[in-house]
Length: 353
Image 1 (cartoon, rainbow, N blue to C red):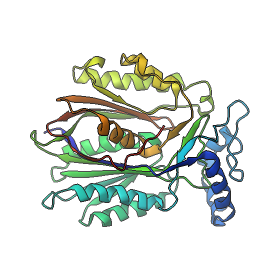
Image 2: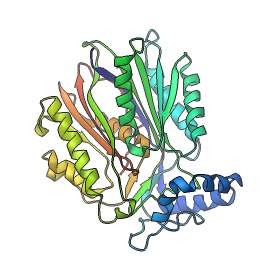
Image 3: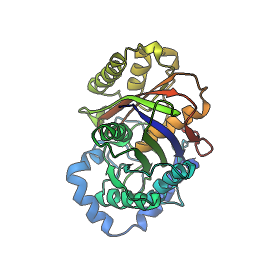
């Protein structure tokens, strides 16, 4: 079977505002929130409350959560906040952007995968259903949640497996979107803030003559993470597993680190990003860590779109994409551009720290 090809990429990042401005907005949202929120928060607290306990203050009136041993984030940092569109609208925005670029005689979309970080399972089903309606043709929609920034890697792995296992499946649309609002805080650790964003990838079963980015390999894993250790770095398990995954992907395809033309990853955890850069022989690329805006499930797609908008198209042009989720999920993908550049909308891709 021919390798899956990413034939279209799009991303949307809203305007950024100072974090201090968001905390004021958040306080107002908490006072006008639905009474049902409190009951709902209590219902998920047994499973997810450790995140709040790691940074006391996360449940208090919009105030930034502060741990005694962790420095609070810089309130002057800018974070992208979407105020006019809900999560469903963000997902539909990028899905429609992909569909609008397709020729009228293109194959219909067979499967839609929606990636997000909401704890509410009803969000998954309703938004996946809306995306199916937006596409306008019968397809199978489902969602991935709770893997945070690693969700697109799991979605790509599933897409690759579906194209092998299901001969009638030809086109898979992966959509990732995040919009943070109370009772969940944007501040998710020392110097890491959640931003709103959305992105989408179109993965197709194509022949060798089709322009696009071949998905050579992709993997996602979960490792145990102690969330209280963000101040001093990440557990060795995540670093070790990430480097092992990258090494395994390169070895399976007979590649060395210097065969990779571009590396696209998530900032925010200095020990992890530094280890990846050094492993790939790019120590000069390690930058001083400051406040990082993390876009959750949309992060990798947004950064890939940004990289593609500024990259020269070499043949072949290999890209290593890697990312992580705060719950311990990690992912990496090996991509290769062949033929004509694939479609992507760069006008909607804005800068993110």
